[in-house]
Image 1 (tube, rainbow, N blue to C red):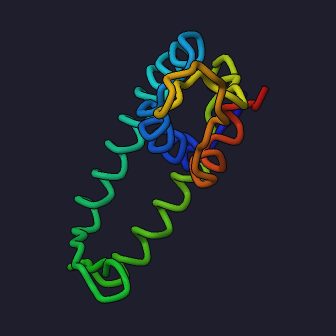
Image 2: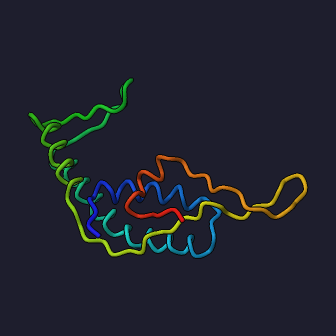
Image 3: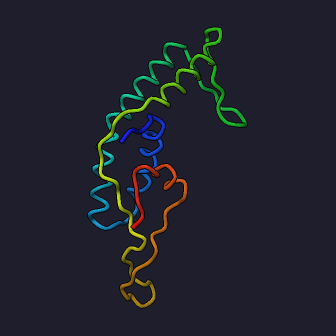
Length: 137
């Protein structure tokens, strides 16, 4: 499936959060395999990003409303933004199995220790970042 570099970076972060959840073995296994598949593109994207930081002599400063990007070069910050945006839009072909997330997972009642199923709770931001990578069963 074709995915953009931005989708890969977003998925990488979301997969890190999803890996903290206790899930059925096969779901966990598929998540681990997907993490392995996005690892190389993430490294490549980061290498290019670091190269752009060096090329445009970019520095980052914390500000009240986020982070300010500065450059020693005239229009360097804008050129940096433009190239990072172009990098984010680039697409690659990534072959992977879609992760099938269950709606419910096994749990134990804290009071009576009865085994039961409970709804799987995942933050919407994680699911949004993984839209191309997961299905809900």
